[in-house]
Image (cartoon, rainbow, N blue to C red; front, side, top):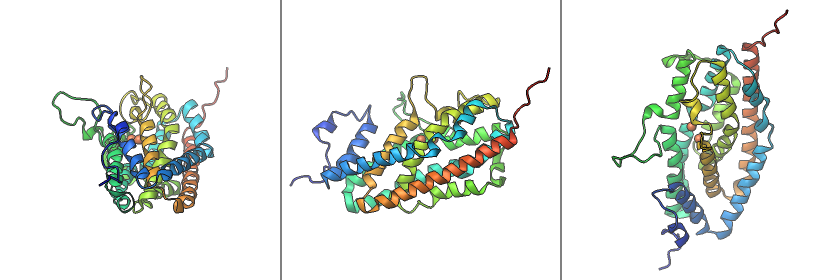
Length: 302
Ligand SMILES: [Fe+2]
Ligand SMILES: [Fe+2]
């Protein structure tokens, strides 16, 4: 019987080495799982995702003045601390949770795309999740997985908080802004809907790449935190020009293009616009905090 679900790699897929490029195989299997059901659907959905990428890139958030402020102004320790506390509540505490909920939500794909639909989505999401949880992609001699929970991105974030003077459980005593609450809900409200979960992840990965570098630079020059390691090192380009979040971002567009059905496109687009507006308000609030807590130094009189 013909294998209509493409459960075996095609000859082109065989050329991709699972030892060296599981990411490419994951993306390939995602695409194949959709093409096996409807050859045109993948092409249409990929075009839809490019349309949404352009929408994100042309939103004011993508060039928010906060980026310039982080690049150029010295902030007080207090401002940097409050920015991290706000970010913790709005994004850091729920980001990995969102990936995990999305991973569970891939069950929704099976009825429409069969076994490979579900498995390929889990496989590719797992690469992002492994990074977030502190695993590393380097090969090791003992042929086992490599990594440490102490290097999970959120653990690294918590270490940065301690360096900023927010020890242990004090992070939960902070009374966050309404803007942070709304941003957090832009993730948590999607937990039970796989398409919206993968949409918010795609949107967030793309936006975050704009802010991570300038934010790391700001922390490096405004505090005594060593940003050549830890949380603010993970999310910026390395010396070789490699950028973890670029890979995550592209992966999430593959996942999104697999999850999308034409009848929900307008709904997804409207949601994305709302999330971008919401995160834009969050950045406005952060700018206000930065300015209020880091008064500009007066020029010396002589
Ligand atoms: Fe991360
Ligand atoms: Fe990421």
